[in-house]
Image (cartoon, rainbow, N blue to C red; front, side, top):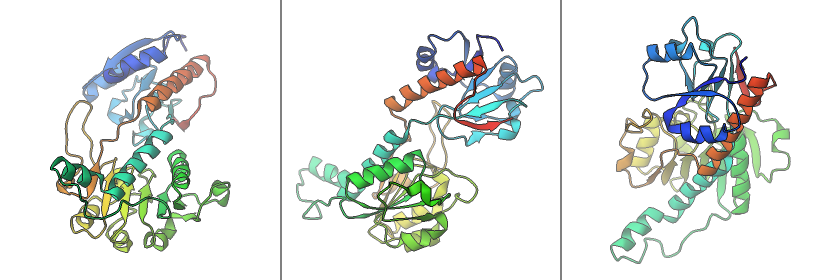
Length: 321
């Protein structure tokens, strides 16, 4: 193909992407709120789409796209069957440290009652409901998933002196080699370990077998003092079941960084059909990557596009059309 690929990216990312591509000849067009028909016309003149979505409605008969490069690890927005023949979909990582930090920020805020302490002290109240502050040491941490994020969560848990158990979709014992785990197994063992967990952290994608993995039955197995944190994908935990478990204080609290519904870029939308924002035992964050994560990702995406131009093998390939 041409040594100057025709690339399309959302306008919010164009500045950072352009810096990463400074040494690579290319032409760049940006998108914001094009409809499906406009996207189809644009992609008829595009070699590389840098985006987290590819819809069937965007593929016209003359669609020229040969590389769809996601801006993150998730591929939820990609309709793989719509990718043109010969086209490739790649994703990119580098987020594990930032997401692990986010998970432990939630855990610490919940465990120590940070929001309540802050709120009360602003009103001049120094005495918390508990006479002493708890540590994380010796508490049981159940991690769901042992991908990039899961492995980093294990490392953080070990640093804090927690008893770490991991359950994963692929429970090959070799994957746990070298990790200081209390236990390791498959997701089918979830009921066995939920009842003893003080913290449950979900770091798995929403896919066949993981959507609604944790529902009312699973939440009922948890201790009333236990916390659940989701940094993977919202639908892994049943939206309604979790809301009612929190509202009725059947579990102690939740830290939610991923949700069941999202706005389009630059728009606002409630993250759930249920009023999680009215609950006092939830920490809510909007799933934002770190600066360091995105600096790494733009560099890796630029390198992959260079490989694409030179006809070299691509990295992080998740689909070939």
